[in-house]
Image (cartoon, rainbow over all chains, first blue to last red; front, side):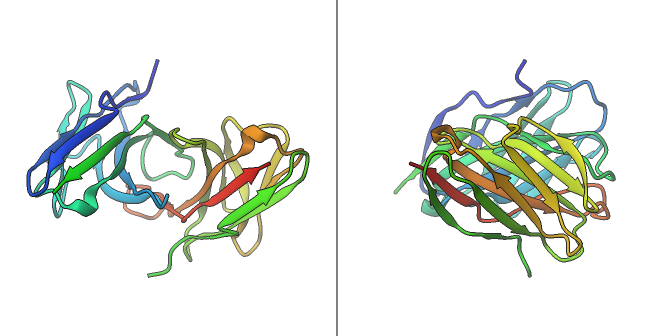
Length: 118
Length: 115
């Protein structure tokens, strides 16, 4: 079974509008972390936001917020006030296990290609 | 702030040749991860090192090997290259003392093309 599922291969949004990118995950580990990365066409992987499984509040980082619904195992990324520079591939990723250790590879979803239209 | 450094950024090789990719983690980071991202694919975990010891292994072909040196830099060695090895190879580093997030910081990647 897929550990990370991103059901939207592509999304379009108008500049200055908000957009939600979906991510669901599957794990039996009670301790895990969820990450969102942005990958522009240049190829680098840019960290956006993190949510730990025990975090009580949804994470926010500037224009990015994470809609974390633990019971539904979803961790959707919300980008507010979209900008042309937000056009990129977005990956949801999961780290299984507590964050204090040293051996926690990331498992990625297939990604969502976001296009921001002027 | 210092970031993860990878070299070379681009590499072109012929089939059956060998390649060595280098990674210099962020200073004081104790864990290094290698990922392979094929064209149009998501990154796949290859191997990781903690304090210079291999800590986990993913879908890494036997033709590949890696190590982490005393200065914490890591090298991914790839032999008998195949066309399917053409990909973007990322190195990421993290610190176990990072407050529990274990956030991985990615390098810019090495784009390997096998002809």
